Image: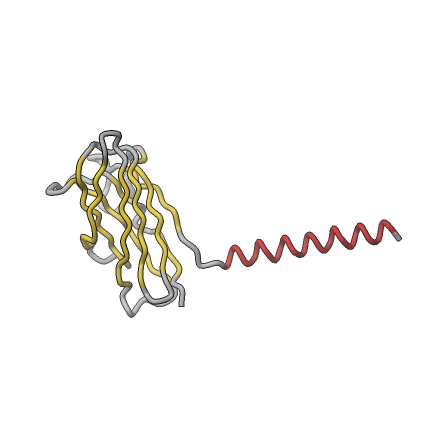
Length: 149
């Protein structure tokens, strides 16, 4: 009888764990992506092949906004333009980020998601020093983010 009780408890714990894991997999949560440095030989649509320069967290809200948190941790001190491209469209300047003498800086912003977006959007984030075309941070242009509707 004791063995049956213990076996029942173990089975219950497995079911609870499996259902919790399944719910977490269906979650429409934020996506975290590295920002990599672009090198001269990198193709226009390839993610940068250089070292990581920071990361970006991309999320959506129920009222149709894209939330982006950019963190740079290895960039020269200065001010940078942050561009966002949605669904392979041209990137649009949405904010600026300033790094300190240690190369660390943060920016947070919200951006309107196009109304014709369905269940998910593809997002890329590009970080460039102000007034230049050099890319210091580039997220993989194929980062898919689920919409919360």
